[in-house]
Image (cartoon, rainbow, N blue to C red; front, side):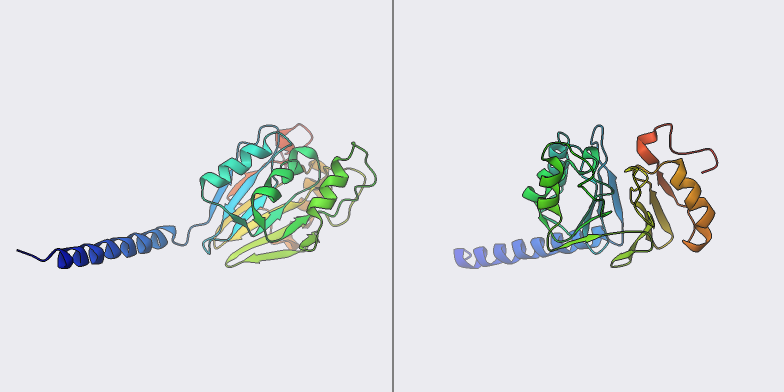
Length: 226
């Protein structure tokens, strides 16, 4: 008859072995894959990215209502930390969800286009946004800026300067990982598309595997030429 203690020790070793195997399997399964999710943010934008190095990036956060849905989507993936939160421009359908995201997650760095908020008046919304979002870890982005997340490169293609049209001031972002690329137009209009077409040779080109069309597919964006 086997001693109970010996059997327990063997079972513990087997259990530890299984846990180690599962941990290795999970790490191997993650692999060198760039994951990009276009979340259902209703009348708004929210794009979530997981890099091969397990860095997490959120570009736009939905609106004041669907921002909650965005946070629930991220939590369902086990997200606790967001390495970079990028708001293309401070229209409520892009930045409204910030009020949920910054409370639910540890956000390491904050970026937007640096749009002056004093030129608009919509109650206290923009003041709250500035107080909550534009803090120590905040930086305004513009054309030519580059962010590196391991082998994932985020190029900012627009705007070069800010004007009076908030949609035309939207960040245009190109994400590159190896031979794969995504072009995210934010709310950029045909005016910006034409500017980018004229200068694309100096901005690594516009050709991409995935295009997120500008301004939610509205008629003032995504020209036939573009």
